[in-house]
Amino acid sequence: MQLNLDKEDLRNMIKGCRPNYSVMENPIVKKCGHYVGGFKDEWSWNYNFGNDFSEEELYNLYMICKNSWNIIIVAE
Image 1 (tube, rainbow, N blue to C red):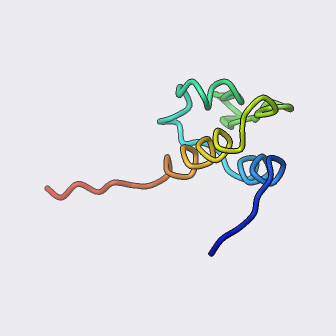
Image 2 (tube, rainbow, N blue to C red; image 1 turned 60 degrees about the horizontal axis):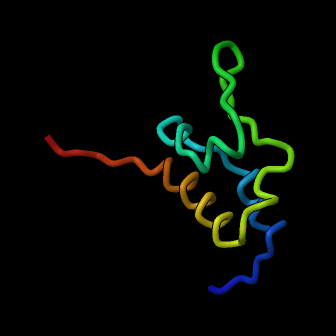
Image 3 (cartoon, rainbow, N blue to C red; image 1 turned 90 degrees about the vertical axis):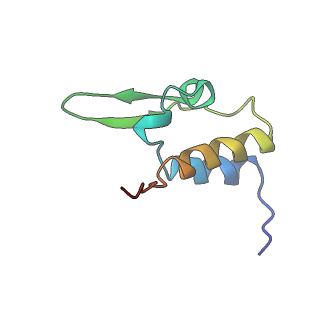
């Protein structure tokens, strides 16, 4: 399947997910939002995140967030 996505489409895809805690310190991820810990415990995207990113950079950010939830099971 091929899709034609513009920057706004990519930003909306990213807004629909959040990074796993394991990648929240990634410089690209950290530049675009912040973690609120404690009672609330959530990720919040900055309002204008990614405006200075290319479409490729936005896609890479999406893939970082998406793949951060892949669980690797190690057999003992």
